[in-house]
Image (cartoon, rainbow, N blue to C red; front, side, top):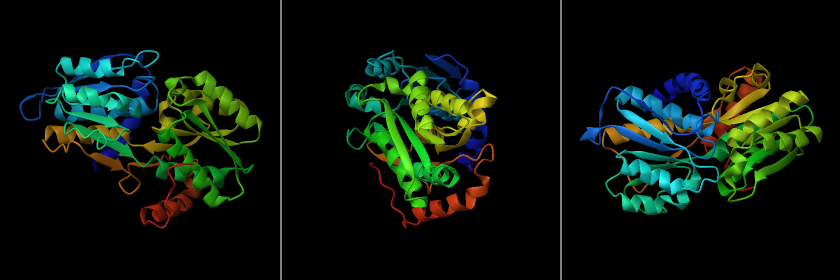
Length: 348
C-alpha cells in the first residue's frame, strides 16, 4: 500500500530534509506530464518555519519528493517571511512561474488563497488544513485531517503511561485547528483516567504564528509543566516542539511529538530517548495522493478530502518501542472510534 511505503521511507527522508536550511528550494525528476499536457512542475508554499521543522512542513516535503520520484517532473518550494505577511505573494509567484499544481501548506493560507485561485483559474491548487468548500472555487481542493482522533490516542498513551497522573499539552498558536489536537488529547486521557491533571498552554495567541517556530519559548512552557508535576507533555507546535523535547530531556521526563514520526526526525539521541510516541498526521500521504490525482486527471476541485483514523490518515508512531506494552489498549480505543462508539470532540 502506498501509504505504508511512504511511512517507511518518509522517516528517513524527513531526517535528511530536516538538515536543510529554511527557505526556498527545489528539485527535479525525470520529466513527466501533469494534467495531461505539460511537464509536471509542482509548487509548494510552506507554513511558518519552512523546510527543516522536523514536523509539519517536512512531512509535506516527503510527500512531494515521493510524487516526483514516481511521476518525474520538478518542484519548487518557498517559505514565508518572518511575519508571514507574504503568503499570497508566494502563491502568486509560483503561479506566475508556471507551477501547476500548487500546494499551500497550513491553515493560515486560508485567509488569502480565495483571491489567488480566482486570479489563476487554469492553475490547480490544494490547501492543507483549510476547507476548499468554503471558498467555492473549482480549482481548489482542501486536504483536511481528523487531528482530534489521532490526538485522542496520544492522550490514551499519555494517561496510561503517566506515573504521576499529571500530563501537559503545548499548542503552538491558539486557533481552531490546534484546539482540535487539545480536545482530542484531553478526551483520550480522561477516558483512561477521569481524574488526571492536564496542564494546557499556547505559545502565542490567535493570529500570531510565531508560536510554531519558537523552540526557546516551547522549552519554557514545557519546563513549567514538568516542574509543576507533569511527566508527559504532548506538543502541537511545529518547530517549537524541539524546545519541548529539550525540556523533557532536562527534566528526565517524556514528550509526545506531532505530525511526523519525530523519534526518527530529531538528530540528538538524548531527545530521541524522551519521545514516547508521535501523533502522525499523514501530510505526506495527502500531498502525494493529491499530486497522483492531478497527474491522472481525477482532481475534484471545490471539495475537501478528510484523512481520519479509518484511512490511517492519523495515528500513533511506534518507533522506539516505548508504547509496545500498551498497544492493545491503544488498538481498542482506535477501533471504538472507527466503529463510531466514541465520538471525539473537536473543541476543548
